[in-house]
Structures are given as C-alpha cells and as structure tokens.
Length: 180
Image 1: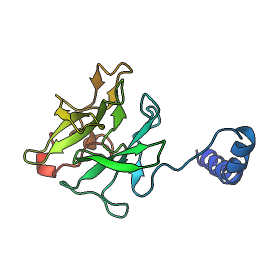
Image 2: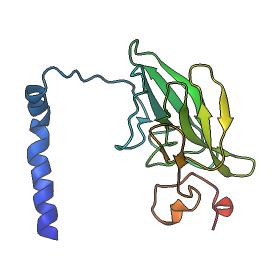
Image 3: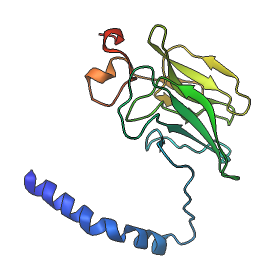
C-alpha cells in the first residue's frame, strides 16, 4: 500500500509541471478563462456550473478561506455572466457544506437555479428554486443534491445527518440542533 502511494505521489510530481504544456499543445483552440476569484467553488465534477443557454455560470462563495464556518455563517450564491464577465450575488445561503458548497446547480432553463439554505430560527435545511434573472424564489420541500436533466426532480440525502458519515459533508448546524 505504501509503495502504491509513493508511486502515485511521485507520478503526480512528475506529471503536474508539464500538464499546462500538454494541454496547450493538445487543445490549442480551447480557450481557458478564469470566471471568478476568491473563496469561489463549483459544486462537484458531475454537474456543470454553466447554465443551459451557456450564458451564465452559477458558483458558491464561502464566507472565509481561512477559518472553518460556524452555524449562522452565510455564503453567497454567485452568478457570472460569461459574456461580460460581470459577477453578482443572487442569494445568500446558510445551508452549505465544506465539500459541495450549497449544491448550486441549474434546472432545465436559465430561470431555474437550485441550492440549499437553512432556516436559522429552527435550523431546518431546505432547497430553494431561484430565478436568478428576476430574484423570485420559492422554498422547496426537502433539500437538493442532484437535479434531473429535465429539472423536474430533485434528489438528496439527509444534509443534517451526513456530518456523522463523513467530515466536511452536511450543512453547518449547531451540534444540539443536528438530527440524530
């Protein structure tokens, strides 16, 4: 096992420095652009931050890069206009986790953006459907982990209990309010 770890680490050290050169030579016509900066993440590799029309990117901004979040800390759901580069905050969220942010992801149109939030009066996690173009939102039943491609179904695990399965997952709740 240690030998395998050593080989993998060695290969990463060996390959990483040349990756930008390989990518540039292999895909010279594909532009790479930085969309946003500072405390910004995208949800996960299995969903795209790019809207269905290709015009926008939806991202999540953590409240801090240097400290762990505490219950009641809010992050920001960000919308980046890919055409103009303009960034704007479209919502605040208390319902984020360190690995996946607020699980920000698109529905079937640019008018449907989903993410998680937490009601800090009773520490209940819930999903939000937001039209980022108008600001109109509605609270959904349950939470969101994945949205079906047609935008008609949301799936999720228990974001309150997942903290017990793996550190860094699950919404940030006071220990006394976390479901058992």
